[in-house]
Length: 287
Image (cartoon, rainbow, N blue to C red; front, side, top):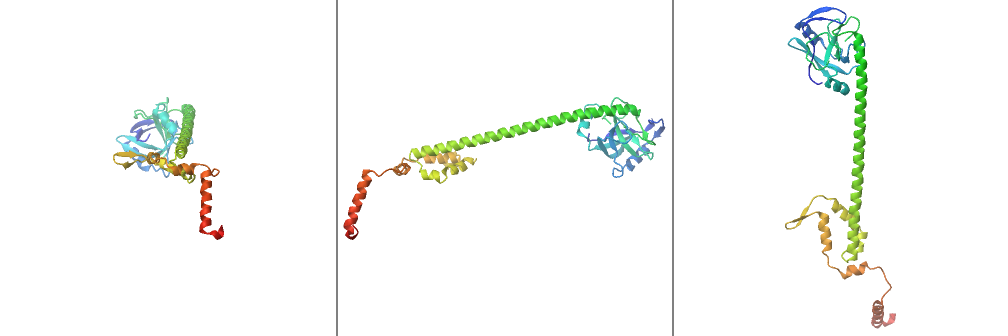
């Protein structure tokens, strides 16, 4: 409901209160030119309610094309637009003030409009001293009640659909978060296992682990780009670093530093005794 719609046309028409009048193209032009939404913005209603409520949209502008008066709707309630689209309200008629300015545009369902021959889309006014081109008010009220019920049903359907969509989105976010946490935990365990195995094999110093080797490898794992570390071969930073560490030959120093402190062996005791004897000969005064 975003385009122009026909609401009135040239010819003799009888209003709801029995007044017959012939309407000309000039009359339609005057209606269009006199319409000012800043002074009175005509609502879109169902039937011809006395108080112009409830409003399901508003008329932004009027214009004349050929022998017909057209209106541009705006701010149409989504639920109402869906009912119009479904063909519940194919006809419409207008209500005019005594000076001929537009009071409202009424949509009609089973109730026929007084002005025949308007192109279908889907859109009728009432009160003392106004001109309504539709049928009796009792039918309008019945139509209004039916519309209100239909709108309530459509609104409930929309709210249920939105709530279900929100639940699905929340469940999706929770699943993504759980997966990300599990993935991160798995990667951390893999890095810790790699470091522990490297220490055991004499390729990584225990001090490296204490100084944050795992955190450093974690930052490498977070990088998504790949680099060409050697000619013709591209690798992710973490994969290259693991291969680099794994290429270390077993080193006696790594093995020795990886051992826990132990009681001095006989070899070390002999070395210490020999050192003391040499020191005594070099400096007898301190012996």
